[in-house]
Image 1: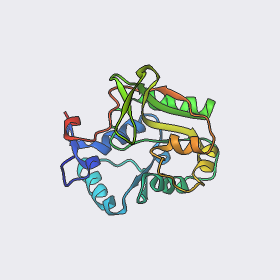
Image 2: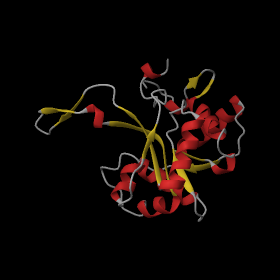
Image 3: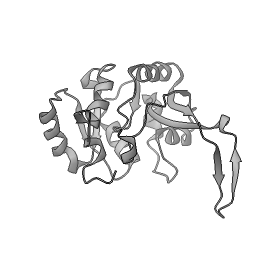
Image 4: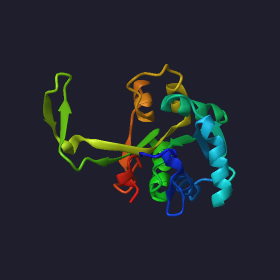
Length: 200
């Protein structure tokens, strides 16, 4: 983001990006069912921002790990030992709709998993180690977003494995453990704020 401020704390329409994201989930879930996983060094900054921008929802705060996998595992360890479903969402996807969130819970409760995605708009090429490339039929490609929602018992079993280099998201962890991945419709508006061009 070319900024010293972590991107989840940058302001969007007068509030931190992360606050927008949490407020979307609060339209679907009670605050006590939401766990925010942040690097320990960012906890105090977040608490100061909550006071400054009037965010008072009593969500749970958990320290993250050195990787996404470890951060998710830390959040999972905080959950009570019950049945149900759990969703994992990027803090910098503030435009997710309540309808997508609710649908992810409904589908995961029924089928075990619900991974949000959109069809690829651009042409896609697969690049080999030698630099050569070949066309891929974009009709068969989906761009994965969050939330990614799963049965809690599946999620617990999948995250008992050791971290692998190929674990780029929760769906890859569940797939590695042998669980079926169900794709659901996301939205092209559900962007992950990654570069300065994304903020406008």
